[in-house]
Image 1 (cartoon, helix red, strand yellow):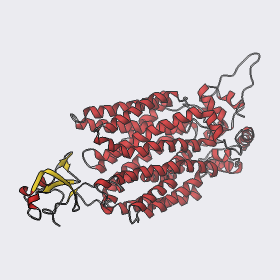
Image 2 (cartoon, rainbow, N blue to C red; image 1 turned 180 degrees about the vertical axis):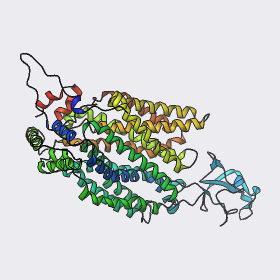
Image 3 (cartoon, helix red, strand yellow; image 1 turned 180 degrees about the horizontal axis):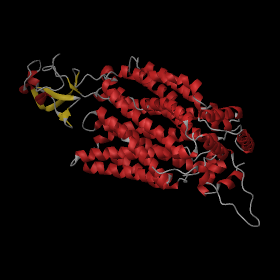
Image 4 (cartoon, rainbow, N blue to C red; image 1 turned 90 degrees about the vertical axis):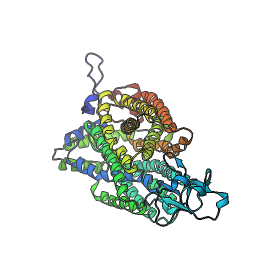
Amino acid sequence: MFKLQPTLEAVQEKSETGPGAANPPKATEESQLDAIIVEIGQFGRFQIFNYILLCLPIICNAFYSISFVFTAGDVLHRCNITQCDGLDTSYDEAFLNFTTPQRHGNWDQCQHFSVRSDLVGDSSCNAGSFDVDQRVNCDAGFKLRNEDKTIASEFGIFCADKWKLSMVGTVNNIGQFVGIPLGGYLADRYGRKFILVVAGILSSFAGLARSHAPEYYSFLSLEFLDMAVGSTLFPTAFLLAVELVGPKHRVVAATVISLTYGLAEAFMGYLANYLRDWRVFLRVLYAPALLHLIFICLLPESVRWLLSQSKELDAKSTLRRVAQVNRKELSEQKLNDLIRSNRQLVAQSSASGGHYSIRQIFQALGCRTALCCFAWFTHTLIALGLSLNSTQLSGSKFENFSMTGFMQLPGILMATTLMNWIGRRWALSSCQFTCAALLLAVAATDEVYPLASSILYFLAKMTSTGSFMILYFFTSEIFPTNCRNSMLSFCSSVGRFGSMLAPQTTLLIVHYQYAPHLLFALFGFTCSGMSLFFPETTNKVLPTTLAEARALDKSIPRGKVSKSAA
């Protein structure tokens, strides 16, 4: 793996010499804080312990954001044939050859051959009793292939009502659309730790309540509530993790978080295979979220957030604790210099009360925000679409889903290497382009080489995940500290429109089998080209003010930016 050079080294300028040379710029609060973190340990025992804690919200969010694949999954079924079926008959029976048509290699789920009009009332089960030229809808119930218990089998959601199953995924993402920006705003106002505790506990309550839902619409309402309060877990934990470590290890930090998410998704596939009852499945997933209560005592608040809120004593206390746990020395002089620099920065900031207004942000970074929102829309559409469609591949839907989770691991490692090698911008563009090209290859080879097509499908998922990881990291670097969490949450919430549409893309299959692949590829190629308009942030200090964030586009040296940051 290529090493990321320390941020402080990456932004240093050569000092000018001779007459008229400018005085060397003073270190900013952000660079001073990075220098202190380098001194007391960029990724020592303190950070490792906190990363173990942060695995909890990451795992919970991985479970909750896509558990509907199994709780609201379709159950393979066929019509109950009154003349032939009994209590002891199963899904596959010999009489189906003359009672039920086939569709896409399986028995038709919603129609069967009609009984001959001249034999109505005859209870005999033989080929002569059915008219294979006339089909009728199921009118005597259904026979299920296995004993899986989802809301489809329990609430009787079959055939004409199947839209209700895909609607669960859409409502889940509507909840994320509401919850992510709200959680981001509250995290910037009241702190990362506070939001993690509140969101984790409320999400646990909503999920456990959903496991007792008596009917479809109460289940749907609680699905929305769960995501409205719990969807902020991942972006908030991600930012807290990145802000907790030194500049040299930010990529490694983001990689650890993303690997945890992928492993959690893969594990959920195997867990769903073991727990076939959706009520038990939800209770096992949501009960551990109550452990977020321990964050009150064990998890520290982000030092960068504390400084941005002028909570200097708390920030100093946290830095001293980091130095003590990591067994490093920290001079009081450096702490005092940091506080003085922070006070000057807060005083000079144009943000009222320490926060930028929406108007200020969009005036300064409007084009960047719009581009970021489109990238998020594309990534959520493709990423969720690939995960959902994996259950339609040949073989076990549980193993296929777990495979998409495992394929995220090499995708994340690939993204980490590319970010360090060719930079954030080109890495993002190349991953999206490769994913789109692989999806076209899947559509071209599926009928002739199905095994090769499946391999290409999982490779597309791998590159999609790598691209998503880069985008998350990228978004956390292109906005200033005071609105970083809010803007990450805003872009992510706009991206939820893509994940709202993803469950509905399967409806396109009726018109053309590979229509979803072509749609994903179209957006992928477009996003690949537009990503090149992002500023490059590799080896640069995280921007503290809007002026510094704007300077990323202009490639203004860090020292000059700090002079005009007021």
